Amino acid sequence: MMKIFKLTVGQPDFPVTVTVYQPAAIADFNQSPRWPLVILLPGGGYRFYSDREKEVVALQYLAAGYAVAIVAYRLVDQPPVYPAALYQLTHVVAEFHQHATTYAIDAHRILLVGFSAGGHLAALYADLWPQLAQTCRLPSADCAVQALVLAYPVIGLRLGWPPDLMTRQAISGTWDLTEADQLVTSQNPPTFIWTTATDELVPPQNAQAYVQALQHAGVPVAAHLYPHGPHALSLARFITAFPAGATQEATFGDRYVEPAVATWFATQLAWLHRVLG
Image (cartoon, rainbow, N blue to C red; front, side):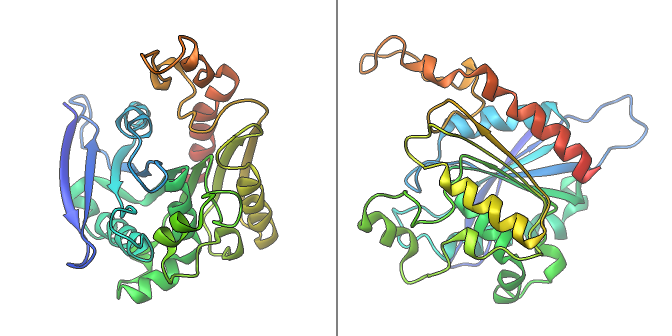
């Protein structure tokens, strides 16, 4: 039976709650496997965590043989978001490295998956993890991730989102390392990134700028720009489409079902198999 439990990790000033989903043990196996781990960062504009990018996505990874940890990172209701969110994520990654046996995790196959604003946090972490390890006084090896998956991510606060200075300040405060495309190094992990050309909230220039930076640094990257679809498609299937309601037209949810885009999840799994083995 699948196990779901919560844990709190991090420093006293920056605690963070993590919801862990562990695949069920398979009785036919002679020994319990070590699962690859998805550390999942849902979007929500740093104001909330989108349910359309949490458990429903976690279950897809579970079905593919991954354990999943959903991170409740710092939001703008406790401004500023940065650098606290990065310190929180650093301790989450280290927790699973250091206690991989306890969690039945394969510490050599840990990846970050970030949607929208969660993608911004994931991209910044992928850029900055070596110095974050030093700042948090953690062994560098315990802070590494082996792959990064980004879905319609915010990449830089100068690239079209957020549109207002107040939100930008609530996110960054005095922290100036917010432009992920300008912080890429050769130590970034292999990256899978996708968005749509018609994203009305987070311009596709965000993803394109990150792809260019990764390519310039020699980091393996798989990029997919789909021609149609609104922001926050999630799985782009009926299960993550908005239902019709009193405040929405009957066909509103149809925009969030894009069969051509829905292929991203299987395409990403195949890519992860090649990258992680």
